[in-house]
Amino acid sequence: MDLDALRVFVKVAEHASFTRAAEHLGMAKARASARVQSLETELGVHLLQRTTRTVRPTPDGELLLPRAKQLVAEADELSSMFQSSRTLRGLVRIDLPISLARDYVIPRVPELLALHPLLELQLSATDRRVDVVREGFDCVLSVGTLTPSGLIAQRLGELSMASCASPAYLHKYGTPRTIDDLARHVLVHFAPRLSAGTPEFEYRAGDRYAVYPMRASITVNNTDAYRAACLAGLGIIQVPRLGVRAMLEAGTLVEILPELPSEPMTVSLVHGHGRSVPKRVRIVMTWLAGLITPRLG
Image (cartoon, rainbow, N blue to C red):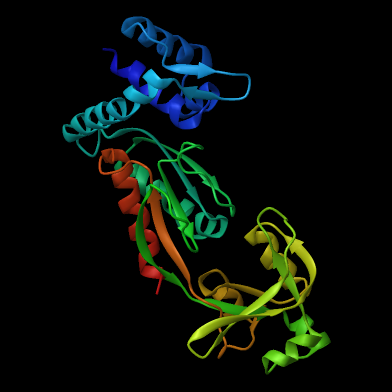
């Protein structure tokens, strides 16, 4: 049985798309389709049901899929066992929050590729929640509460939070000293999909966290715009302290209500490889954890 054809079949089933599977595998869509067709011919069954909108396994495909995943994972593991660090090769697709990618990960990528020059990284930087399997990521650095899934999550630590405003904003509206003072203030609202929702200021209230509904002057969908809006005096933001530490030290942002912080954000590495993580992915995950963990609480 053709192992490469099995690999294509697995990716098409995971992505529900020949196009996305081909992109992940670095091959033309026509070639991916031909490999699956050859596998179907070899087995004498139809493995995938194709429609205009999606691709899904047939009953025979569903029967084959878990065994195919296991075979492909074991083959990758066997291959990696005999690769030295200098010959480690292959594509690793990762997704990171924009600020962590820009400030802490991308500047260190040359060091990783110097150790493993045959590795190829595809790095997505976004502040939205991605679908790890459907979008074809090998691992994702996730910030915030994880929803239940069949994915494996490695908790790295927490990001402590800071509530901030610009000096110009505080000169105009005054500095809040209590939660009730926020009635005279506005937020910059963060919504990854610009969806409707009530802007809220989160704060610690004894042994729990509470929210204070507020008005927003502007809604943005990524962390760069979020900080920029705050610097422009458009409202209060609540952000990981790590991302604004230099601005707080320089005085371009001012922390408010430090005794009432919002809930820390959990940082995790998430992947969908189960217990059979390919060596190239495992090395990249270990490298990412080594970069990020020392900066967390």
